[in-house]
Amino acid sequence: MILYKKTSENVGVMEMFCHHCGAQVSENSRFCTSCGKSLSLPDSQTVQEKQPTPNAISDLPVSEQLARSSEIYPPLPAKNPLRKWLILSTGALVVLLSLLLWNQQSGTSNSSGRSIVSAEQEPLSNSSSEESAAPAQSLAEKKEAASPAYIRINQVDSAEYDQGKVDVYFSLFADPELEQPLNSDQLNKTMFNIDGKEVSEFAPVLDNDSVSVNLVLDKSASMDEAASSDTLLSKIDLVRSAATDFIQSVPSDAKGQFAMMSFSSYAPSSPDLPFTFDLEKAAAELRNLESDGGETALYDSLTEALYATDLQHGPKYIIAFTDGYDSGYGASAQSVIALSRQLGIPIYTVGFGDKQTALEDIAAQTGGQSYTISEQDDLREELKEIYSNVFARYTQQYKITYSPSQRVDSGQDFSLSLDLNAPLYAAHTGSLVFTRKADSTLIDVQSGLSEYQTNYTRAVNELDFGLVSGNIDPDSDFYGALLKRIEIDYANKPKMVDPIQNAGIQSIKALSDRSYEIKYFKLFGFEEEGTPKYEADLNTYVMTKNSSTSKWQVSKFLRDECSIYRDEYDSGSACGKGENREFSGNPWTYN
Image 1: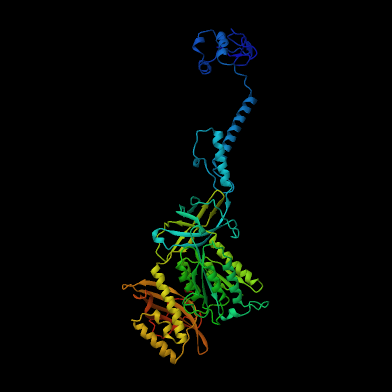
Image 2 (image 1 turned 30 degrees about the vertical axis):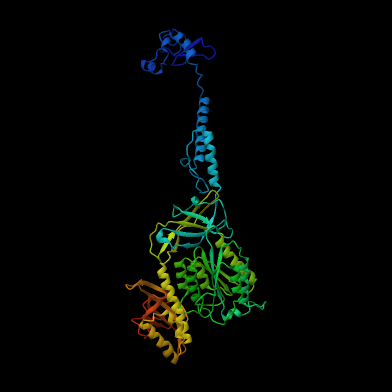
C-alpha cells in the first residue's frame, strides 16, 4: 500500500507521495525514486490507519473507492496548525464564559457577604435556559438590594412562658444610632425568626395592644427651687407643664393609658392617679402636682411603681423624673434593677443637673434610656420632647410572639436572638439575655414585703404603729413585739430609720404551711458618737397570706446575720443585736 493524498482543487485527479520522504511518486511504483525505500506500509499501521468504507464500494479498486467515497464523506481540508489552535482557543473561551455565567446565576458567593439565592433553591421549569435565567437573576438582584437594618428590643413579656408563649416588643431602624425608625407595612411573620425558628405571631403594636405609661415624679423640697437663673419657674413647674403638654398632645387613637405617682420622703401607699385612658383626667391630675418639702425616696417609689405597672397587659414602661439622690429605706438601685428585669418592665430616667451614674445604670440595665437636663436647655420643650419620643417608641413598634425552646424556672435567665430576612431589609440582634418573669404568687409576696418596709419606716419615724399594723399578721407573736417596740421603746428613746445604701432579696422559699420565707439583705450608714459607721444585716421574714383580705403579711422576723463596719476596708465586727452570726458576705458589692 502506498500513501496517497487527494487534492482539494480536483477531486478526480490523485497525486501519490512517499510516506518516508514525501516525494511525489507514480501510482504503480513499489519503491521511491528519491529515497529508495519501499512504498508499502507495515501491516499494523495499515490496520490502524485504514478508514472504514461503505460495503457497497469496499471491493472496488483503490482509485475508484476514493473517487466514490467523496460522494459519501465530504473531503477534509488540509491540516493547518494555526487554524487548529484558534479552534481550540475559541472552544475553551466558550466553556469559560459559560461557567462564569452559571456561577453568577447560581449565586454561590458574592463580595458583599450577603446571602444570594442559589440554583438549588429555585424550582426547575420546562422553559429554555434563556427563559429560566431571567427570574433567577432578578431574585438574586432582589436579595442584593436588601439594606442593613437595626433592631432594638424594648420589652420582653414572659408571663406565659410555661404555656409556650413569649411576647417580644421591638423597633426597627435604618441606622446603627437608632435615630431613623423603619415602619413598613410589607413585613410579615415569615420574614422573622427567633433562635432560628419561625415565630407564631407578628403585628404592629397599635393593631392589638394599648401602651401603659407610669409617670413617677419627684416632689421633694429641692423640686421647688428655681429651674435656672434665667427663670422664676421652679423645676416642678416645668415638669408639671411639660408632662401636661405631652398628655394633651397624645392622639386619641394612640391607645395609651397613663398613671402618675409622685413621691418625696416615702413611697406613696397609693398612686396619685391609677391607670386611665382618660387623657383629660390625667392632665388635670398633673396640674395639681406640688412640692411637699420632703426628701427623695426614689428607689422605694420605683419599686412600688413596678408592682403597679406589672398589673397592666401589653407593652408598658416607667418614666421617672428626679433632681436629687435617693434617701429611701427599703430598696436600692440594685434591687430596682433586679425587680425590673424580673417583671420585664423598662425604666426611663430623667435627671436634672449633674449626671447621676445610678440613674444611668438603672435605665441601661432595665432596657430603658437615661436623659440629663441642664440649665442651658429649654427645659419645658426638652422634657416634652423626651416624653413624646419615648411614647412614640412604644406606639410605633412591633410585637412578635414565639414559643421558647429553653426550659428555665421562673426568675431564671433565658436568651434569644431575633433575625429579620426581608426583601428590603436584613437584621440580626445576636444573643440577648432576659429574666423569665417570676410566678405571680412570688411577685405578690415580694410586693407585700416592700409595702411592709415602707410602712415600718414611717411607723418608726412617726411613732405610729397604726401605719404598719395592716402589714403584720395580727395572730403572730411579732405583732405584739413590734407594737411594744414602736409605742414604748422608741417613744422613750426616739429612733429614726437610716436610709438604705444597698439592699436586695437573697432568696425566697415556699414553706409547708403555704407561707414564704424571704432572706433580705440591707446595708445602711449611721453615726455612733460622731463617727460614721455602717451596718449590714441579713434578715429573715416569713410572709403569710391573710385569708380575709388576701394580703401578704409579716408573721415572723429574725435577724440572722449582722456586722458593723468602719469603712469598706474593715472586716467587720458583731452587732450584738441578738443575731445568729456576723454578716458572711461582702456588703459593698452585694447585688
